[in-house]
Image (cartoon, rainbow, N blue to C red; front, side, top):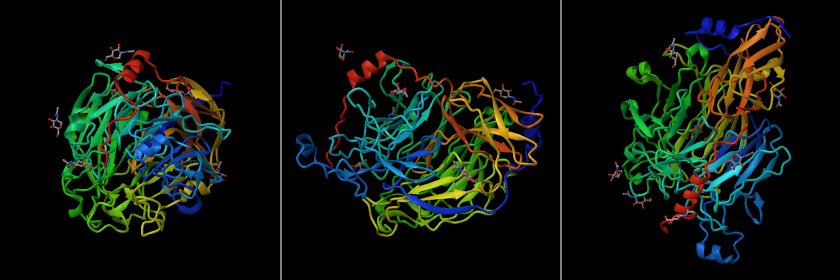
Length: 593
Ligand SMILES: *[C@@H]1O[C@H](CO)[C@@H](O)[C@H](O)[C@H]1NC(C)=O
Ligand SMILES: *[C@@H]1O[C@H](CO)[C@@H](O)[C@H](O)[C@H]1NC(C)=O
Ligand SMILES: *[C@@H]1O[C@H](CO)[C@@H](O)[C@H](O)[C@H]1NC(C)=O
Ligand SMILES: *[C@@H]1O[C@H](CO)[C@@H](O)[C@H](O)[C@H]1NC(C)=O
Ligand SMILES: *[C@@H]1O[C@H](CO)[C@@H](O)[C@H](O)[C@H]1NC(C)=O
Ligand SMILES: *[C@@H]1O[C@H](CO)[C@@H](O)[C@H](O)[C@H]1NC(C)=O
């Protein structure tokens, strides 16, 4: 195989630098197809065909009763009709193509947990609600493992005596770091519409636990999470190409070096806009490529200027939301320039920002007024703290000139409100899966009802002839070279290769979402594509990735899955684990409200 290869990506990049992203024009389609059985509070694509969905458990079972197992089976419930082990289910695996649902059986309360993958392909779901369920477990220190399988037998594994968080975390965030571990950040110790000094957990920790900076397996104080009260639930975390972590919460931002435990404050959010829960803006890392010198640019859209110390009873579901959309490059130049301010067509909170394989960003779902949550504001709509669902998505083109980056050409509005506790994700085939919405304490049919219906939003590229390829190995190591056999639609001159992490979606926050363009050289006969793995683990932390071959018209192939790196598990420090187990308990003291 010594066909001549042309270095097309570089050429393509140069040609299009400063010009709008190449994307296929045309009409989008939206279909409602299938139901999820539990409401999709958390969503992650876990294979080429399956997605994991987790819901919450609302009803508190008395710990006394739980302990002595009196008629317990129906105590724990989100009154979903779907059952498992004689109690309502709150977790499923759904087939993306057939929408067939397989019930899962988590043992702890997943309500407002975070999640993400480790380098070996196992998904971890961490933290959750203090509300105890019939197993006697709450979710606060839970660490749930889910290793995707193809035979329909995998379930969520929990072993709290050995595998748990060091401290209570409701509404934490997480990010996969370059050694394939997870960094878990913030959260609070008890239930609330918003965080406050009494319930704040201003710390972070690693899984697997590390002996680092003098903290042997235990949690580490974060000044930033102490300084960003009250509105700092679900902080935005992005792993940066230099191995540090972008963090934003409330009105502030920093670059965090986990290796040295140092924080560097960077310009805060302009114009007093708050961007984390319950004022949930969306955030995304824009695509990384050699053409932009792998410069990380962060985009944050929406939020609210509501006072985060206000009693929620003084707020209404009609509070205006922010249309501010800000962008900054995470290098000295970018930080010196500060945030560039743009405007969405309308205000939005709880929107989901989805990276598309063509390099653009879809902003979908959420609400145009109010705040996140339910049961708090003076004039709840049903129980919702928000009103005026944002039915109409909008596209952001990072390469278009400022002032013309937003477009709705060909887009289509939904009629299904997807506000608090809704989720969205790109699928391996390039469509966008929309799920959930439940601004209610339990399953409800009142206005802004519990939503089980799935929708699939299909960009115009779904309707044309698409490229295809074979030859992606099960693991794809950094800097390694692979040759794919490609079949390109007639008229294709160039291709790009987009390696994507679809992330973990909850509360309009997309943990770990990422797009890295790989170095790729097409053979002169356009049948072979020589692709080089990510240059460094910081550019794409080792773990699951979906690889799309994208034509010069902006049409992506199916995104096949590989494990970036070697597939090895993240480092395990037995001493740090022993110390963590020795110094922490499985059940934190929870105020008894
Ligand atoms: C903090 O939140 C908790 C839980 O909602 C509440 O009981 C407490 O009063 C709040 N404290 C302050 C200082 O607002
Ligand atoms: C953390 O926040 C609390 C409450 O706002 C404050 O009392 C305490 O002094 C802060 N600690 C540090 C180290 O900043
Ligand atoms: C690209 O990034 C590297 C590392 O961040 C830096 O050393 C180099 O100067 C950058 N090159 C350009 C052309 O900006
Ligand atoms: C992917 O989408 C195309 C439409 O572009 C469709 O024909 C094909 O069946 C889909 N493949 C899978 C595996 O869903
Ligand atoms: C991945 O690593 C974690 C942490 O050590 C471990 O619990 C899990 O079993 C591993 N998964 C696989 C598939 O090896
Ligand atoms: C557990 O901690 C106690 C005191 O903090 C110490 O005496 C003991 O040696 C520790 N055990 C292990 C196994 O680390």
